[in-house]
Length: 304
Image 1 (cartoon, rainbow, N blue to C red):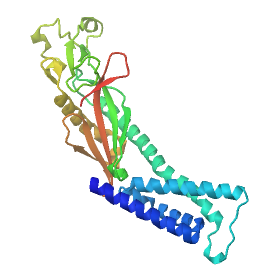
Image 2: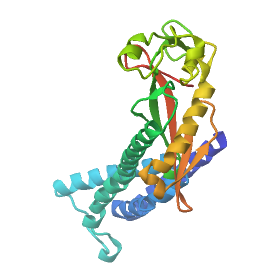
Image 3: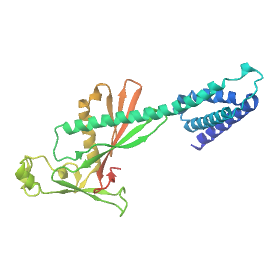
Image 4: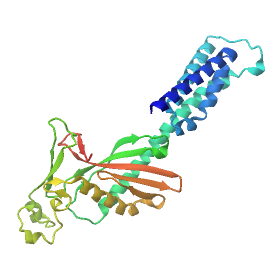
């Protein structure tokens, strides 16, 4: 990394010296043309990871455009010894429009992709909820967009969403924080506690109370969460993540986007990570984190 930084610094220094020399010999019009031609290759700068150098060039071109516009408003003009060697100022001022479009296109593309990802995850979670399954498994809530981790290209960007979990009927989640006041401590855990279902049993008759029914009467009912995804009285992170991964993989066939995209699950012991590919060269990486809400606040304990 240090060697890479030194190479980039030397590259930037060389480029700045060349620009300064061109400005002294040919004036700012030729500099503006050079900067514009460099920025027209913005895809190259992004793909090669030279983001810093790219934005340095952008700042230089913006500064140049401001100075040229200011000089134009004041009526300042340079004499042209050789008209054929000078560029049209109107063409140079078009650099500002190009710069705005160049910078906004990747941002706009990222925003559009995030919207597509959110819509896809909504459909995916709806498909998960429609699968026949144990009614005493965690209940998936609407996903919350967390953000994205950008890479050199859009294909290297990971889109992250949080999927909150609610306890199933007859269960309650209790967060036991590792350190007082430290809500996201790694040694925090989620304790699962059984709750009485007698009222629901009498009114709806769709469940039996785990607390007040004898064990032999519960054999015909789906097992409780304590018997499936827990280790002792605590929710097991790895078991829960594996359950969610299997659920997503099974539900994918019912998602409308599955006709055009191929889902490939990625190994993870705490999250649900997968790639979506279209054709041979387009891919999208999504990471679904699981979490439990802390009381009535907007804070979540995530499976990290």
